[in-house]
Image (spheres, helix red, strand yellow):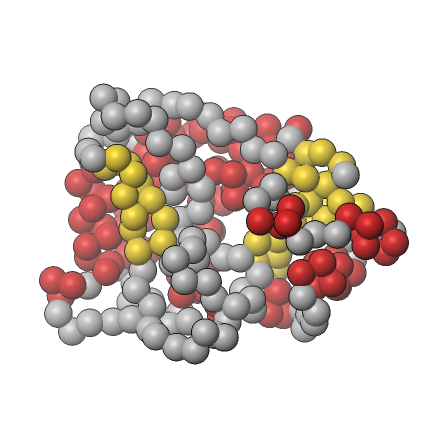
Length: 240
């Protein structure tokens, strides 16, 4: 069994979803340290001036807060409500996209919920994306696995905890800390997922194509045909 893992992401991009589809099991690492200015509470969409951030405000806390502990900040001023402002931005820039009218109500329903937990919001967005793109890979939260250790040791502990034989890693920051020899010693396979981002027709065609946006950009513009970009994920694995 091949397992992949990543921190929860708000409105994840296509490569995140493709890695899930390429695995037999995906672990959402919700008990790692929260990283400010990362993708746990924000992602980008395309606007008339280029890629722009949609951000979920979180309450201030300790530098050692875990993702699972982060709470969404609320305001009593409706003009500053993040849900209202986020939806207004999405609607403004995608309402003329080919598939917006058909699928927007499902996304809008998520913004109608008064969320408190950041990770619960992220997981709900992930569920929506998995449903749209037909991804059936089971999801497990690392907070249920009682893992210990850090970096490579923690990954190995996770692989053992779920009974997997191979760990599928992305090619981002993990390439800097994963120790391939440790996997060999442990008798666990290590594979790399390399995602080739598609180019498709986006809104505002006079502006250069913007890759690695929130999944809704591809879905509202291309619709179900974009499922093919996730289906190829199983052919984009390289064994170390």
